[in-house]
Amino acid sequence: MKLNQVKSGAVLSYLLIICNSLYGFFITPYIIGRLGDAEYGVYKSIAALAGSVMVLDVGLGNTVMRYIAKYRAANEEYKISEFVSMSIIQAVLLCIVIALVSFVIILLVPYTYANTFTQLQIKKAQYLFIVFSFNMLLHVFDGILSGVITGHNQFVFSNSIKLLRIFIRAMGTVVLLQITDNSLFMVLLDTALVLLFMAVEFVYIQRKFPIKIQRIRPDTSLFFESGKYTVLAFLVSIAYQVGGNLDNVVIGSISGPALVTIYSIGLLIYNMFQNLSMGIAGVMLPTVSKVIENDVNNQNITNFIVRVGRAQFILLGATVTGFICLGRDFIDLWVGSDYKDVYIITIILMLPAMFELCVNTCMAVLRAKNQTGFFTMVMILSAVLNALITIFAVKHWSYIGAAIGTALSVIVGNLIVMNIYFSVKMELPIIRIYGRILSRIWVCLLIAGGTIWITSAFLNGSWIMFAINVLIFCVVYAIGLWLFGLNQSEKLQVPILRRYVK
Image (tube, rainbow, N blue to C red; front, side, top):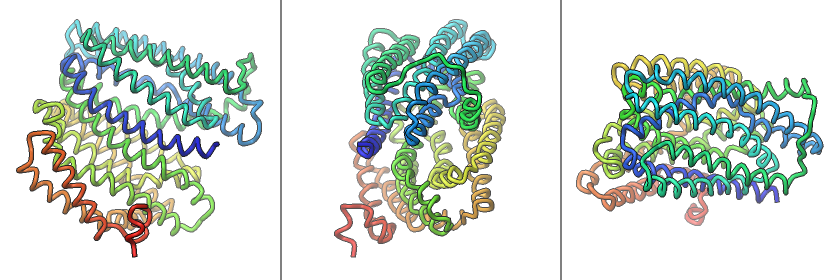
């Protein structure tokens, strides 16, 4: 049953990625059309500001999940109720901190956006942040409920709930924006959904698991033990929150809410691109730890990194190449010619990330050897670098400057510093790894990209023409991979190709 939960959960994880992408693809243009650039820009600016505060949630849900899984593996289920009770105490203390920080930010909103927001927009921004703050408080406790469920390996229920939430949110947004063009009601809808599904999760836990909330005296040693696990998560979370939210906050305060809308669309495509990589990693990387633990031979570890990296690059490289060739046409058809700068924003963000993501298996090596401290430090320094460059660059080049700041922080931190660390400290031949990952696949990408670069000059202007170009790219790319790009062992990994491999 556990194996079925894991396999089904993996399938549902892919489905979640697809549904989230479809939600962004279909709902985002509709929301922008109903709200307008200015209202949507205010909404995204405050959503980014609220996301920065969410760093205070130091992965409490992940900690609950980890310790429940640990107790179950050790046949110490009797400790679960005590740990969950202690986690609720931690959540209450955390919520007090979040509430205080949120109160201060609400007071600072008028000063932060004084030069770019109207008085009416500032008032709307404050109301939005109040509701977002309440959502953050709910999120802390929702994380505990989710951690209990996933800690018991109930991946099917957990991911099914997330899928249902996406569907209801999409339908609710469409209906709501037919009635009103006020972004505040969208945030209230999210709040109602969080409350609804928290109730569902709570009932499920009560019926499924024998967990009893009890009065306890917090175990000091356990506080410190779990604290070691959450501190690094907290620091890394700071870096990721800065990378994901800083740009919109800075653009909103310096350039205005309408330009936040343009950048947000590029960021949406970039997040879809990252999720594509995470989907592959989620399915292929669980075996990495076993490979590392059972084999100290660096050559075998290198071979595994290359194998996963080539699978990543086949898909990520195709996405970047296809977007470079067809991105302008796609954006014109999707959101209109007024958003043409989304093309350059997205390319600036995607290119360095592609080379980082195709070797993200190396992070499993760090985790297996318990050497994530250096990575945490690098992520913090990259976040600081991103903040400094972005604040300077946005003043001169607006949202293009924000994209450059994010891209440079990825290049310096993830590509240069971390790859030097992998090479020197982990003794991984990182240059040779990149060479083997890109080997021959880049030629297939060049041929497929060149083909649709030519065909798109004649076939453009409609979704049908765009689909034809995508089909041509896929066919040419697949033929190139079969004839030249893939090696024999890679062809054997694709069931439909096995019978044709000699």
